[in-house]
Length: 383
Ligand code: FAD
Image (cartoon, rainbow, N blue to C red; front, top):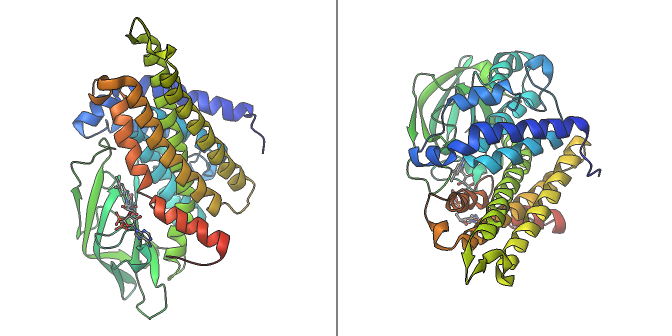
C-alpha cells in the first residue's frame, strides 16, 4: 500500500479542503441550529464532481478512485457530518449501487442527475421494526401484471425528504429459508409514497432524515434493480463500501476535534500559563491524534483494497468499528480540553460529540461490526 498521495489525489483533496473552508465550515453551526443544511450545497457538491467520484464519466461521473473518494469524504466530515452524509448516501449507497447493478437504461436514467446534484438519492433498508436484523424486513412488493405494488414503511432514511429516488428493499418472496428480498428504484413522487421528517435528532441535525410510508405504490417492472431475490446481497455489498465512507467521515470528525483542541489549548490560559503546557492536557491531545491517525490508516487500507479489486468487507467493518468509536473518543477528549466552553454551542466541539455518536449506530452498530468480524475470523455466525 502506497501512503504517498498521487498528484490527482492530492489535487482532489485540496479542492475539497478549499470548498469546505469556504462553503461548509462557516455555516455548519447555523445549519445545525436550523435543523437543515442549505439545500444549494447539493448542486455545489455536484458541480465540483464530489457526487460522481468513482462513477464512469459516460454516466456523468467524475471518475477517480476510492482513495480519492475517502480523502474528499474525510474533508467533508471535517467540515460538517451532515454534508458528508449527503454524499455518502446519494453517491456511496445509491449511485454506486446503480452503477454496479443497474442495466443500461437504469444507469442512463438516474446516474447523470445523481452525479450532477440535480437529483438526490436515499437508501431505504431500515424499518420501524427491523434495524440490525435488516434481512427480516416486512415491506412487501407484489407483482401485478408488468408492475410491482409496494407497501410498508422505512425509518431513519437519510436524505429522505429531499431525495428524488429511493433505493428501496422489499420482500418479494415468502418461501421459508428464502431471503426473498429485492431492490427497487422508486421515484419519491410516486403516488402513495409519503415522507415525514424525523425531528429532534441528537446529531446530524442538518440532515433531512425521514420516515417513508408506502401505501400500494405502483412501480413498473423495470424499477427492479438487479435480479429478483438478490436484494439482500445488493444491500450488504452497498453497506460494505458505505462503511468505508462512514469511517472516512469519522476521520474527518477526529481531525476537526484535533485541530480545535490544539488551537484552544494554545490560547486558553489557566494558572498563568496556556493550558497546552500542562501534561494532562497534552495527554488528551495526543490521545486524539493517535486515534485519528489509526482510524485514517484503517480507512485508507480499505480504499486500497477496493481500488485493487480485493476482498474488503471485513476490513471495512474493522475500519468502521474503530473509526466510529475513535471519533466519539476524540470529540469527547476535545470537549474536555475546552472545559465548560465545550458544553455550549458557540464553540464547535459539542457538535462534534453529537455528530460522532451516531457513527457507532448506523450502517451496522458497533456490536454488529464485531459480529461480522468475528464471523469472518471463526467461520461461525453469532447473529
Ligand atoms: P436495533 O437493531 O434495535 O439495535 C438495538 C441494540 O441492540 C443495539 O445496541 C444493537 O447493537 C443491539 N443488537 C441488535 N442485534 C444484536 C445482536 N445480534 N447481537 C448483539 N447486539 C445486538 N437506515 C437506512 O436504511 N437508510 C439510511 O439512510 C439510514 N440513515 C440513518 C440515519 C440516522 C441519523 C440514524 C439514527 C439511523 C439511520 N439508519 C438508516 C438506520 C440505522 O442503520 C439503524 O438505526 C441501525 O442499523 C440500528 O438499527 P436499530 O436502530 O433498529 O437498532
